[in-house]
Image 1 (cartoon, rainbow over the protein chains, first blue to last red):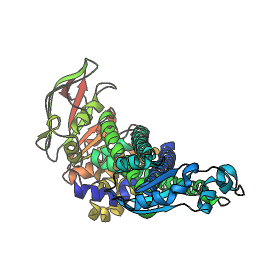
Image 2: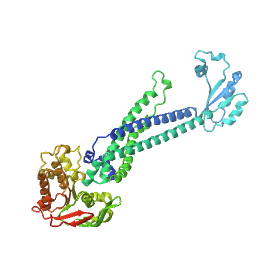
Image 3: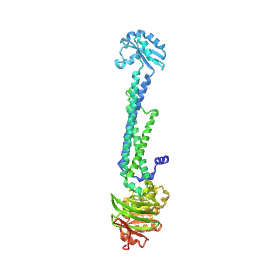
Image 4: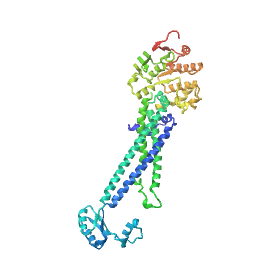
Length: 292
Length: 223
């Protein structure tokens, strides 16, 4: 089996020369693999990006808690800070500066709004560890009218959305693979049935069905892998272009396929070739049994 | 070599022939004659496993075709050279590449040294680089014969190999087959050309079989 597979990968020049290269199935396989790989790159990119953004947000918010003190209780800020610093599980507690508050409100109120003249609540940025008991602290803070937000309300839906996007991404990749298998099977059958005279001649001179099947399998595998490589490269370039907005870098989507994720760009053509090989093997043996 | 025992064959329920017994002994030469549609081509196809008998058994080199896998049948076919009236080639390959096909398909490149000799033997040395569509009818028959013998098969099955060529070329093809028989090959030559069979009397010791009305018989003195 292993030896046969390696022999198939190495190929047999004579066997492949025996099969004419004409026919639209050649272009069909390449184009289909290219288009499906292009779509696969998009789906993977979206899935990986969404996953990464959600992870980044969750990571940024993880261990971060915000305490809000109403504007009319602003004078109590030092005592609240003291309370927090003495609370187990709090590693750091600090009040946001006026500039930081200004920056937070700038998107809604504009950069030049005099925030200090507005009844804006005071915010305390609290960093915690896993021993922090949010419920207990919230009770203590309620006495002075302060509220505690540990961002769980954000984190959980984000994690859920990321998980659903990942599932959706993989399901779509599975559907794309199924479509590739189906279309390559169809292309292989078309290729074989349009070469019945060639198959008849090869059989007449003693070629086994395995020999004939291999000649078709390797050719279709290489066509699918080539199409997939082209589709992957185009998909990657388009994705990079979409993900980068030069005039407003702060809105750039997190670019997937860096680091280990780049492996996907290699795997897509390899897996497409493998899928084509399986589909062609199935179609070839089945179709050769049908050709008298 | 090839034995047919009590063989029957039919298409779509209608029997074409039945109770056919035939033994192709090593080194023998048989003519198979009979009217068009009698089943000569079918009988030859049974002999190399391209068709399976409806009844009875066909064995080649001691193995029954219907008990073999498809790949085993293909391997048995390598010991049989087949020439058809409508000889098919791979039109994108040269004549030489087509003739060498049985060697390249079976991985016997060591015999490629015989290619030039075989092409010369059938008188196609000059045409070796041409494509099959460029050959005349007689040249195609000789190329098919060269392809059938290049790998040194033990049996040659020729199905109306002279059906599309003139008398001179028919005699030439007959002589080539007689040469092969003289070299020890077993030959079964299907033809409806009785004149050619009569002409062969001076060239080869042959049995003449007639397939007619569903039966295979030894031909009489009328030949």
